[in-house]
Image 1: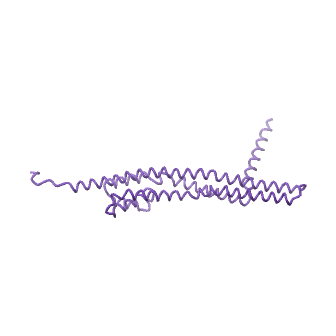
Image 2: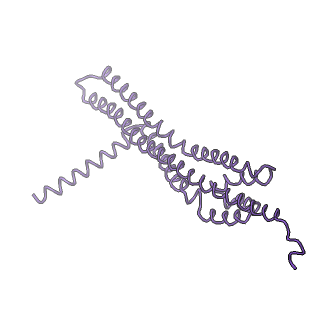
Image 3: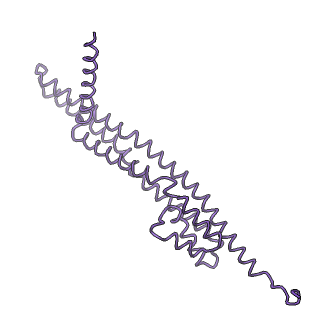
Length: 246
């Protein structure tokens, strides 16, 4: 009894290893193409996991620096801060067109929010497009699995029509073709399901970050408008008459 349990465990591990190997290599050429798609998808997931984060797209330190600049009305310095390559983020790419409109247009104070909305929509679409490849993989993988299924079934029917039933090689070839059909289907689904889930996850994360960035940009615009209004009040305030000081 003590030797039977290790033997059974070893047999189970060996069978699992052979099943995994068959899953990887049993799909033929189409199976290897699906595996290649899975590697590309994994690389994209890792890249998106690091890039599509609030700390990367809307860094807190940039928000603090821009708040200090805009609260004191230094819009030109804030624009220079945004266009520096080292400060290239979602926040600065959206704020830069708004500050440019504010500084160059005679109606910039009224157009800054429109400019921020347009730039925000453009940058959000840009983030969406970066995840399109993951969605394409999620759509193509099951189709390639279906292609492998059709290919395997065609081979199986060719074997049935051309082989001799009494020949052992007939059954081996028939089993190989049916296995190819089923393995490629499974490979396509195994790749497609996580890609579709993660594609939706990253797009929802983009929506959440874009909403947070929109709130931050509204506050920055309000700080700039308040600074400009306070400057205008100081310029418009009448000077005290000379006699009043005596």
